[in-house]
Image (tube, rainbow, N blue to C red; front, side, top):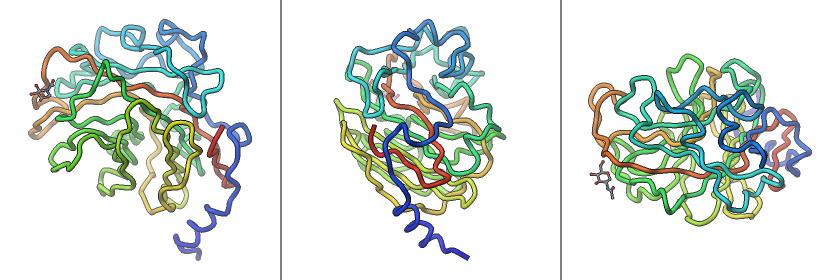
Length: 281
Ligand SMILES: *[C@@H]1O[C@H](CO)[C@@H](O)[C@H](O)[C@H]1NC(C)=O
């Protein structure tokens, strides 16, 4: 029996190498020639059908800002996901949301088996600032039965909590347990880079972080976190209401006239079964 402590140590001495050396599970880095319209039809990067408001299409909400890519974008470009008053998905009038889902991530595919490391970078858009009176989910894994999120990156004022500084990136484990894995100021003007190693066998999660072009560093050990249940990875903006009620998907307050967005870069997932985790490109 190997304790979780010694597993964590093993994961530190395992190979930590350059990006292309680890086997890719999926690649959500956006080719420069995809264009916003390319998100509307079948492509190798993201699903064209989910998640956005009824009557919308991705090309209406995707922005491709002319800024330098993230640490892990070489020939690929940043992508911004925006929300408006029309971002009402599936009758969820309590939310405003739009999220990108990796094209190959069906909910039961190998991205949620074995040991995988998910990479993503997030940046603020000063022209489309979030309203930090609200809670936002920016990245999460939603289980295949839609019953939980096995991890979720949040910012803003967490609904039902007294958030000391809402201008913070907070990475939580499974929402059923509410464990805060890591938090950091949401530094403006640069990419905030994350890697999250998800061990779907040992049911652990390890977080790596850096800003700008600095190589990632481990900021947690591999800690116990229930990542079972497979599912889909979401990258975007899910804005919750400022008050809830029994079903926050359908009730609570959302102001009108919003134009908000978050820029993503370097979304990809690699196989870490052998301990391979890319810390820099
Ligand atoms: C932020 O959201 C709250 C709650 O929806 C709203 O009352 C307030 O006017 C918003 N602030 C700004 C600056 O938009």
